[in-house]
Length: 286
Image (cartoon, rainbow, N blue to C red; front, side, top):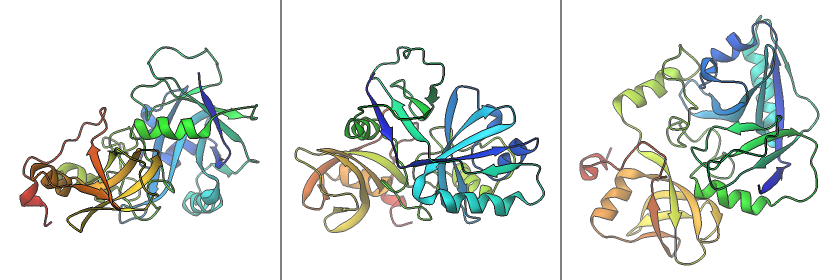
């Protein structure tokens, strides 16, 4: 199995008799569905529904949860969790840096039976696992980014900025990162309204070109009008967050979509359950 060491990640541990209750009441992910041996995505939102911190969460022992996040925002995330803790019987700690090792393969066959590896549930296919421990030799970070892009899995910092995206924008609703059947959490009202009204229009799409794509952050345009922004790039493939109504209008009218001056094709990830709107024209101005 190919693998990569992710040295830009950090770990926060939340433990104690009320750890699960505390986290369940503030995070988007439904911990009732989190099984041992799994890693699931989630977010801590602002009251207005936008993502303040994204993370991957797993069970790390009895009454203990491991939250893996970006190393550059870990201290802020830790402080924010402490602010929410109040009198909950939970301890929130940030251990010394732990190198995350991710491994993957193209098919859905079983892994190499590493009992410490946890399955990354963002990937419907590909058998992706994460391991938390000391780094070994080798690894291919560029191959990992190419694999992640090919599967349409977005991450903050690379594909969107914290504080600038709703969970639906980055497909957290599609990968088990939002619990729509659970009780209230911070920002829940906005996210639930977006879900039930079907008003999510910005979505992660896979961008493909016949030549190398320009740098992340490049604007996507149709006849000079912005439709989205390019995120992670690997050669001629990349991720983009774009208005799916405007993309659908361009496709229907056979108009070119450009990333800078490079023509691109935008497609919904094959595993996703959302579709382009049938009547993009009527919703585009909203």
